[in-house]
Length: 297
Image (cartoon, rainbow, N blue to C red):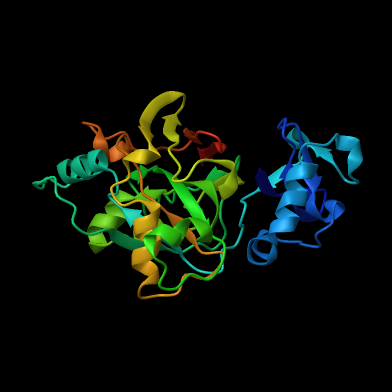
């Protein structure tokens, strides 16, 4: 089941995409009185999930306010996250290797501990919206296709074998990065948190809609050229590890977004590097979730 945040005219709401992918049904027309995705994540019951799943298989005339998906304006699934996005750094081995090459450092092939950092988000960029190039500050703009997951209930001291029960769903995140800013400050927070650097979407695929752990093909394209091509099964530190480790010392609140890292093929990994410029179209694609397309301006 796929859930979206969208606008029709001046009205913003949350909806479920029909099973044929052609229509969106407002959740409020189905029954639950939720007006934002965060309300859905924090409050939805199992019976309400079943109701939405049932509704997604019905004819479009069954629900008031049904609209063709192509005719609505998509927003990011969680337009304004309540907290910074938690990100994993260098969480695919091939990306760890290309990252070391870019920094002209030796890489011993060992990753004993996960690398975590946070990404400030003023407002998440939706599918189809522009990525600002920040040309006054950035000379090496890069893309990173990532699988992100959303915590469905407060998680504290969660054992690895219990993590599955805490996952609400999955979405695509483009962890847009200013490499020169990262290197200048010798850390990642500023260079990954500029306004517009968090494209997210196009939907949330609920956790019960795919196998666990998710083994999904992940790709990115720039102007139609395939750049990244991997599978989420190749994560060094998987979702069980991430949630269990973090929740062992900090409570992960419902609605927390965690992005699992990117595979090789980012712009800095090429020789010479292939950084983004104004006019470039970036497409991040994850199997079963969909595609996230944005143009650099």
